[in-house]
Length: 67
Image (cartoon, rainbow, N blue to C red):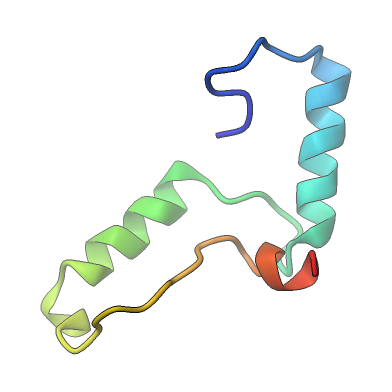
């Protein structure tokens, strides 16, 4: 998701950004489109029938560690 709609960064800059994201993640990796899709699929399933009006970050803990 980084870089979308921007001028592409040199590979070393992109890797530095990804390394920073990994370091802030509780799982030491960046999230993937598949991670987001799995949550969207679960939210649209009967298992999530009682989930309403909630912000659900799918960021591997990045948002709570970047405070």
